[in-house]
Length: 265
Ligand code: SF4
Ligand code: SF4
Image (cartoon, rainbow, N blue to C red; front, side, top):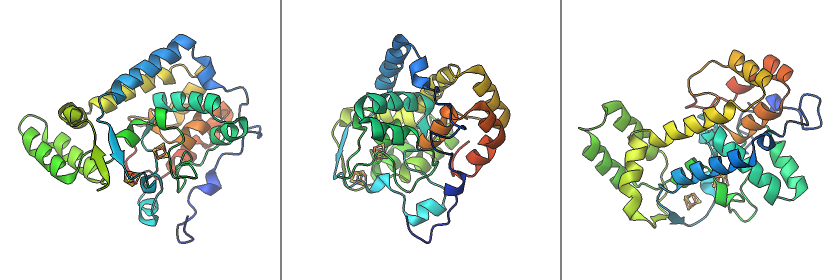
């Protein structure tokens, strides 16, 4: 991270996992039954399967924030849905060496300059379970976005089409090749009609209901905003599921607000 970037998050990082503010027993994913976890994985795969596969130069640049992106309130791997968080957390527990898993699960910085899963070789260390946002990144080029917007102008609400152009137009990389063009029509429809978001939000709300009641109540009391806490960041969710309810009551609102994510609603 450059020196010119204001230090807007590190002062609000959660204490590490050895602190009394963390609930060492809060192995949240483990509180879901095996059947629930399998069902969640299948539902996520069903969604991911609709995204056309791509091939790219693998530079890892889109997994790191530029100075401008940091100032403008962007975050890597955002939005991450709670349903996806749970699956990735389980993957990390099983696939990573114990020390790295502890570090990743104890990582509570909401908006690090670089995705915590970016490997030293610039590859993604959670590739099989990477979230939707990383799968959809730069699938559509500008020409395809413009053509899709024209095609759907009469059949979709104007604000949906405008939102689609704004969102997808901001995720551009000329070094991406679409390997499954036959999936593009359905993918574009899902993006414009918010089908991905709605499905992810539903799955995430179901997962949220599995949190211990005291924690759920504390979260709801602190943050009353549409779409929350279904979408956040890796560090934010680590804090949400592992911090004690008392910490959530005292600090969550400030911690969340200070993330300054530019499209969190
Ligand atoms: S999408 Fe582009 S920026 Fe991102 S890893 Fe691939 S080549 Fe690099
Ligand atoms: S999860 Fe993987 S692909 Fe997505 S931002 Fe992180 S390193 Fe990049």
